[in-house]
Each structure stands twice: as structure tokens, then as C-alpha cells.
Amino acid sequence: MTSGSDPVPETALLTPSEMKKADEAADRLGRPVTDLAREAARVIVSEIEAWGIVARRVAVLAGSGMNGTDGRLAAALLAMEGGGEVRVFALEPQEPSEAVLADFDPAAFDLVVDALFGAGLSRPVEGAAADAVTRLNASGTAVLAVDLPSGIDGRTGDVLGIAVKASRTLTFERRKPGHLLLPGRRHCGPTVVRGIGLPAEALRAAYGSRLHANEPALWQAHLLTPDRISHKYDRGHAVVLSGPASQTGAARLSASAALRGGAGLVTLATPSSALLLNAAHLTAVMLKRCDDADALGALLADERLNAYVLGPGFGVGPKACDFAERILLAGRRLVLDADAITSFRDEPHRLFSQGAGEDGEPRLVLTPHDGEFARLFPDLTPARGVSKIERASEAARRAGAVVILKGSDTVIAAPDGRAAVNASGTAWLATAGTGDVLTGLVAAQLANGLPAFEAACAAVWIHGRAAELHGPGLISEDLPGLVPAVLRELLAG
Image 1 (cartoon, one colour):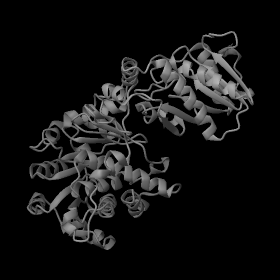
Image 2 (cartoon, rainbow, N blue to C red):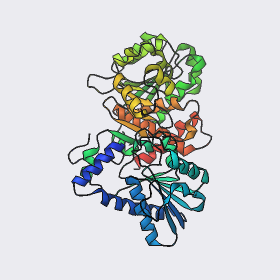
Image 3 (cartoon, rainbow, N blue to C red):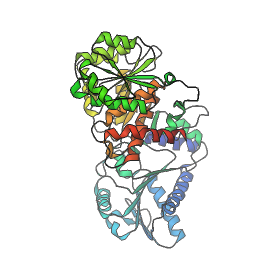
Image 4 (cartoon, rainbow, N blue to C red):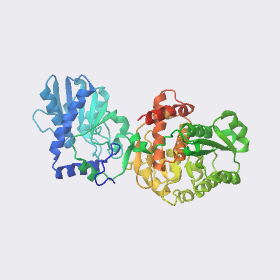
């Protein structure tokens, strides 16, 4: 929790209840909510001007709470500027000039300012409000959502009945989880964060959830930057364990990503049956035979080999469980994915008991998609009112591990309660093998010596950013070659 004079970072995600506490604290500090609302209105008008949209006819949809107050005050400022028509359509009209929502025709306007409901909405949108949202979504008229598109739960990102599909969203001071969690993220369009004069002390008093947007500012200070006298072993040595000859591609993707991601050396530990096949595809990645526990023990005897990947194409079964336990018992850091996760579905406690080292720092990073997550945590299934952040955080606590719960809104959670929702990526990542690349990128950061949470966050963001640089037509083999460009961006600041 932030305390003292520490600022609340720009990456922080504040829940609706925390923002309410911040507003209450601001009032006690001499910054009443009426002042904040006036500044919010000014910022709304400023954002419309900065957008550059031609908006001679503006409709403001106003609710009965503070979100509606922000909208009404913005409407008054727009009307004072002149040059066009501004009309307020209200859930509960407060002035004779305000129209009821039933009269709202979005086709009659160039821009709609959605100030019906803010992030604190906790019940489904119904009646006249739902009808107005339905008409708005079908119209194609540009929409600026104030705080969060009406109908989105600011804590979970859930759609409560129906929700506005905004062209862009303007929120104040800090984002909410619902701006990044799905399906809310899809309803926001680009999200702009602007200050409205909320005292820093008020933010500090309210912020305690330890939630973040996963962006470079969260972890960039931990990145390893080699200098001219650095040795390759200063950047660590990652080991990726390969499966049999029929399924070696996934491990090679992980190994290539680990090398491109910054590990000083990478070894692919392969069964004898796949040695020649892997050798035919690899150059800079080294090869070692590893058929059994004795061969793994020989690798573990070299303390320079400090980060391991187990799971991609390895095969499901007791061997995966045995290897994982041996790696963790040897004190090495391990990224567990795919087949290795599934191998523990009947006895997850065997894995969870070894997730953290003696110093409490997690040695284990789990990278499940929803199906794999359900095999280890069958009771933490998606449910209305339970956010993806809460599911991942509880899983991390149980496992004593960092959990990367993958998806279009990937959540990274640590056992100490920290969590982050990824802010990079593209729909083109939904293709075979991209998760294997991610495991290699996590291993690279672990090999570099980053703390497990920061290593996982950095790898997830780099993975998403690399996909953004490619765009349409992306396949998993493209990603490792795009990572150096992302690292250049990061190192250039």
C-alpha cells in the first residue's frame, strides 16, 4: 500500500470504491466534490476540442449521480462557447431545458457525451437507459464516455445488462480495472487519463489494492542493461526442456524467445530421440541430452544454469511432475506452462508447496490459459461479480507463485497481493505457439535476475508490444525476431 509521501504511480488502477474514498478524502482536505466536478467538466470540453471532431450538434446523456453532474456542467460550458446545439437528455431531468432519455435520437447529433453512469455502477442498466444505449450503439454516432462507458462494472469489466460502445473514454486521475479487463476494454476505445486537481494525499489515502496497468513504468527500472565489460553469464543461462521428436517445435520457440529476450545463453535440453531433429533447426541455442532424472541432475549441478522452462511440447505425465519438483528443490527458477501444468491437475499441492524460496521470493511462474488454469484451480472459475484479477490473485496466493493468467486481458498476479492487467497486445496474438514464445521471454527475464513478478510483467508486455509491431498475419515464429526492436524502444526510454 502506498503511504507517506510516496506518489500513487500512473500505472495504478483504482477500484470504484477507492476512487470514492479519494473523493471523500479530497473533501476533508478542502477540495470539495463540487470543485472536482467543475474541473472535470472543463477537462471534458478540452478533450472534445483536442479530439478534433466536428461537433456542431452535441447530446449529453446525464444520469442522476456525479457522472451526470460532470456531464451537465460540461454541457453548460459547451453552450457558453456557442457555435452549435447542445442538448441534455436526462435519466431524471433536473431543469426544464433537459429532455427525457426517451426523446434521445443519436442520429440527430455529431457527438454524444455519455455521462449516464460512472464506474461505480453495480446493477444492470434497464428501462429507458437501456433503450437509449441500444439506440446509441446502433447509430454509429461518435461517443465520448465520461469515466467509463455506461453499463461497464469498473471493478470487474463486466457488462451489466447492456453497455455503451464508446469511440473513446475520458477518465480522471487514474484508470479503473474495468478500463483494461474484458469485456469492458472493448467498450472503451482509446482511454485518456486527465487530472482534475484531486490532491495527491487523497489518492494516497485511498489506494491500497496494489493493482496496476502492466506498462513499462511498472518494471522498467529492473531491466538488465549490459555494459561494455559484461559477460554473457552476467545475463544468465536459461534451459528449455524439450519433448519427444514428434513435438519439439514448442520448445524451440521458447528457446529462441529466451535468447532474443536477453538471456546470455540458452540450452535446449532434449531427449536423445529428438537430438538430431533439434540440432537441424538450431544454431545459437545450445543442445544437451536429457533423457532422465540423472541427466537433469547433471544440468542442475551447474549453478550458472539459473532459469528453466518446462511444459511446451514436453508431454503430460509423471515425468513432467518429477522434473518440475527436482528443478524447484534445486533452488532454480522455473516457468511452468502447457503440458507441465496439466500434469499436476490431480495433485496441485505437490507443486504449490514449492512455489517460493526460503527468502519468500517466488521461484515459480505459472503461465496458464483459462483451460489450464481450471485444471489447477477448478473452484476459481469465471463468475459474475468476480474479476479476473481476483481469480489470478487467489491462485498466486495458493501456489506461492507468480501467475500469468493469459488472454486478451492477461493478468499477472504475485502471492504478496500485487497484480497487473496487461496494456499491450493485439488480437493477432491468438495463434498457435505464441504462448510458447511468452514462456521463453519470462525465462529470459528470470535468467537476467529480475524479481519474478517484474520478470513476468516485463515479458508479457514485451510479448504484446512485439505483436503490435507486426500486426496482421502474425505467426508465432515472427515474434522472437521482433523482440529486439521492443528492447531498443525500452532502452531508449
